[in-house]
Amino acid sequence: MGLSTHVLDTMHGCPAAGMQVELYTTAGGEATLVRRFRLNDDGRNPDGPLYDTASLQRGTYRLVFDVKAYFAGRGVALPEPAFLDRVALDFGVADPSQHYHVPLLVSPWSYSTYRGS
Image 1 (spheres, rainbow, N blue to C red):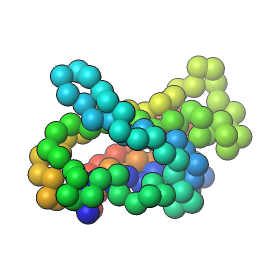
Image 2: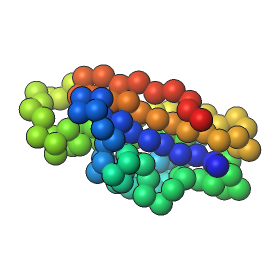
Image 3: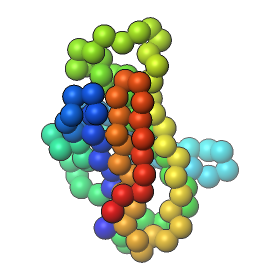
């Protein structure tokens, strides 16, 4: 299955449809943009997995979620500056033959993640 992500808006109790996300590879303190995409109505990449099993490589990655813009777009009154702006998750892939799913549960004031299945 490779690498996938899914975002749930815990403030509204729904997928974070329309949120912009960026995927980077990271090495030696440098980040290289791989792709930028908007989440579909189910809060997932509309093109499916970010990497399939054959393309995923051992190494480190970063997903950046544009939380502030998403909630502002939903009409949420945010302070300036917002508590959360862009949430960056750095993670490692040790065994690319396994599925790495990186979900994000997010509100304007908190977030959590875990390695999903």
